[in-house]
Image (cartoon, rainbow, N blue to C red; front, side):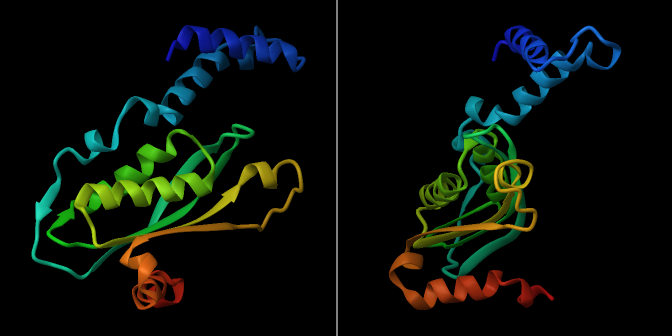
Length: 189
């Protein structure tokens, strides 16, 4: 990413919306915005394989593994406004498991791209499935979208829920039901 070019564009944007980019409070804003976008879009400059970093381990376990309530922050590709919430990832191992922190790192990596929630959910599921050659994977994401809260329909309490189920989570209703029951918030209370 060319940070100087982004700074210049933000400076132009400030002028276009009627602001003075030279006033005290805005003088360093173009630099801060460029740094923010560099971080918020860092998922384009890394791969899932890079964040997994070989943390896939042989295992005889074939039970369900779940990481619940992974915080997720992303930018909506339609308005460049944030959406945020929680992601639940589960899989059934065949011969390999992945380091638990790597599930969160996969979520973060893919969320740090311009996204729509539906695609992000499916991408997470596919990358986990491929990383461990899982029998099945389930991902559920619950997010609030500032493009719906701050503008447009201005619905402050709306939550969008998406799911992606692959392999046995897709084929077997009992497996899918077990996953959904285990991520249900009432289980943890």
